[in-house]
Image 1: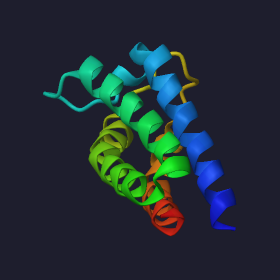
Image 2 (image 1 turned 180 degrees about the vertical axis):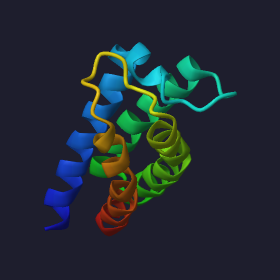
Image 3 (image 1 turned 45 degrees about the horizontal axis):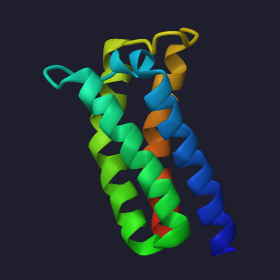
Image 4 (image 1 turned 120 degrees about the vertical axis):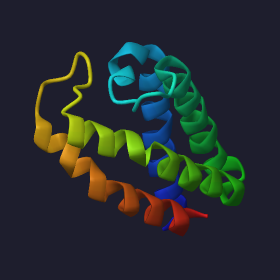
Length: 115
């Protein structure tokens, strides 16, 4: 069961990282000021891929990396929900920004279980 969870999380994080690296502009709008948007998006994309792959190779350190990353990017999700910042190129549906907020603790818990 844990192996299936690891594979699913690995796929999800690798895909998220790939989206951050290939469509950086889309994610820059939700980076709260005064942080450098491009650097934050690229760094989070790389860490998502490294963490996702790490779940398949070294689950425990990768899980801690991903949990720290999920905590670190939470302010961007809050900023998006409160400011109405829109992900460039994505449909404008504000409820999705709010729906992401409770998903962060759920993802942290699932990553914790996968270690």
